[in-house]
Image (cartoon, rainbow, N blue to C red; front, side, top):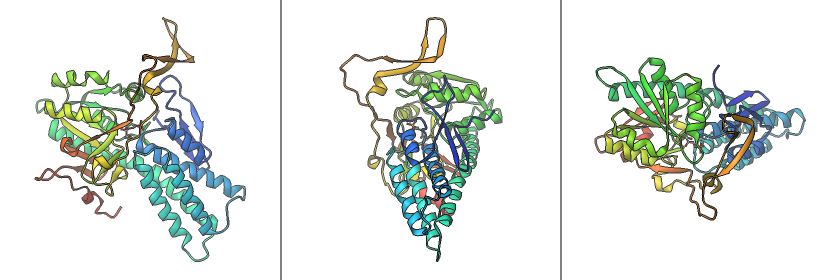
Length: 381
Ligand code: MRU
């Protein structure tokens, strides 16, 4: 069975509630942009590409419903303005990942162009929007498969043992089918290495405080029967010191023009460790994650999440022998009264990144040590 966190048919959208994984697989219905905003904010759906696609499709579902109940304006321009306002609202759900803002910009362009046709009806504008949003779902899977292929080829060529052609890799957070429309970015590279028979072992970090690694990536690795091992975040240095890892491959929430990359908190520390140990450090992301309008990492807004996500941990009740999956318990793991700083992301300087794997290939730095990411968009996309 293929893992899928987004279930969509025209007029119907469901998301796998990632707060309940790995203990329960529950799908929530998303009927409109407000449902999507809350699901994104609460992180029931998460991961930069998935956030963008869920938001775009939620609005598609809302428009379908309004149209079939004759509640959508018949005037193309009015529908275009309505859609733009809804997209602006959706973009406010989480600030760091750029994919949703990128999707909103592209979708606004589609509806504005549809509305600019003489006599354009509300229905025509709505149909143009729905088709473009649905195409984003399709494109993301294809892009991830291409990222997986390019990344695996690069790692085998530049980091595999000459004797065996094999590699073990470390990844952070969750960048797989649960974080995208399917297959994944960094985890897509791991999947591709596994499929090629080139993977010895995939290591994943626990990824505190939300535990995307232990709850979600581990779930995907076990699901796909990929030989894998979980470590806590604090074990990465010890693992790298043993020379067992050929490359670290992570995803991204925003890659800016100079290559500085915002990704899950802890990514920057892994990049520093990789440099110290001579291990390749790679970022895997579709071009929808690249923000050429922002010039350097210090300009990226880093989301800060509530302190309770650090102080409390949630899981099914354990009676000393077995888990009771029907009973979720919240346990405090910090001293009462302590202050908490909980940034969801950090910024890894381009200097520490060996390559940025996209669907069109792996970008590397030039002889001056600089990325030229604008070159990745020469096809006009
Ligand atoms: O807070 P999250 O879980 O949304 O953060 C996710 C990440 O940092 C991922 O690495 C990134 O979004 C890429 S997912 C393909």
